[in-house]
Image 1 (spheres, rainbow, N blue to C red):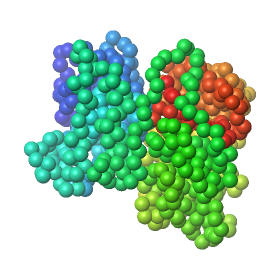
Image 2: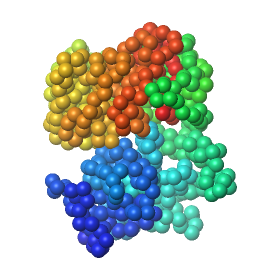
Image 3: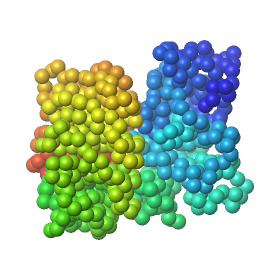
Image 4: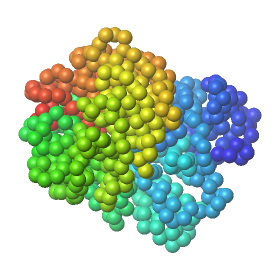
Length: 610
């Protein structure tokens, strides 16, 4: 927001909150939000936005705002600088974003074009999807809470959505406002045709059955429907899935690969320390150690060492299809599964529809090139990336997922030709760790942005939060500033253990396994060791922990005890899951829709996440 538009502080406003100096009010753009917004200055001189909970705001509601802001901060929302969610007057401070708010942009320059307004839909849907995947409440979208930055729209989390229909309608109102300057125009005919069909469907969403209440409170049936998503949740899930994949939703509100909601999980409590019972067990999978691939809410794919694949129904554990087709299969950003075709002939990248296992497309690798490592190095919602060699040279390729056309290729410098590149995509950057170096590329044209020497004895898979990349190199976990390529901090394992596993980042904290001891939590800004927790079963794997709500789930190297769950709030082990049947091979885990999928060789089990 332009500081010149600040409203002065009132006599009731404090001058300082938690070490932040309040400079002025940010206005009453969202009067129903549980907090008042201020422009503030941190002790180090940085400009911040500070939300101070209103006296009449329910404490749980503001605590949810803080959890959602931490989960989205740095990538989809401003970075969280500090917060106190449990004090007498809770508050949250986030970085101040450069760029105009959507309301200011429309006020100064008029409504966006239809195409520009429609372009907001996909990134805002990704925000909702990211909140769902992190297990937090989704933010309530308002035009004044959306900032148009150079890297795309970002959401300032001032409130949370209270029901699925609210999420749907809020997204529709934002699109309508962007295109017309009015949240709800008298006639949708005033909305440009590029936006009108999607906006109409979003605005037509109905709230959960408010008639199903007792004594003014929601009945258990209403709460279960809301938790499961009900019909409205299914519509949102389909619309989000379609927009995230870059395809326009159909009239039914779902994309080309529909993902209907899963049935609600069983309710009930367990004694402390007792693990959940499996929802189902599938014991006829293709043998292999690759992670399970939850491609959408209804299908998890198992890939075998021999190139065979099996599609398993996420709700029942029944096999839906099986095929012998692809090696090194990976999920791609368009909701498919891609890998190297096992047939004879030149190397070919092929993709399957996870609903039926049918082939959707094939893409020959350029003549004379041999893929390096996994067939798909990384993927975002529009592009898949692969690495390949030709004679002594190595290259990165980017292919458009919709057209399969090559978008660009660029040289891949290799310090160690025996290494296997590890990669991830963060916003408009492709991050590649290879031979002791982290190299970042612009995903739009392949231009090399930074190159950083990491050192260490292993190339870990990078994790990122929009500001920094976090990589484990064996005895170290280090953070690299994505803007400069400089190492921001390095945390070294001094315990003489087997070293750190790959990190995962959530809410300003980087979590990694200390493989012979337990779970480590590091401050993502400074690398300071916040806490560690010893695992009841030693030898956790080097894979990144799965983070969901207030839990971290880590796979173990034990044949019987497959997973340990850590309580992030209490900083202790919540439970460890001991399988009733032994399994051979490496334990791998993944999750979707509150289900943790645990693979051990040819066995796949689904556990409810708590």
